[in-house]
Length: 143
Image (tube, rainbow, N blue to C red; front, top):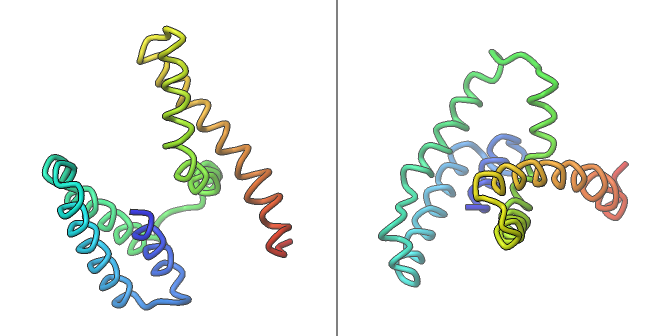
């Protein structure tokens, strides 16, 4: 799935890959994912078919790219776009850790989930500002 996100980003940027080649790569990537899920984790493949989720994500990206000019600039959307990579990278590890910690403290699941969402949001903001746009940008020679 992370590879699909990279492919979609490259299609959007159109710097390294054409739209047609990008769609072909998405198809190859999806087929490889299904093949290896089926080969190594059949239970996962059989119980959680990703085709609908994957097609929904691709359709959503295509719709947004097609109608991009109809959307007006919005500072909130721009902000969420700026932290989306951090949320994507951090939600699984930090979310699992925080949910486990809150559960062990005896906090009810719903409250633990809400606390976790807010904390992930804060961690993503911190990560974007100080890691992605701070340390990493300087290490990679950005401004």
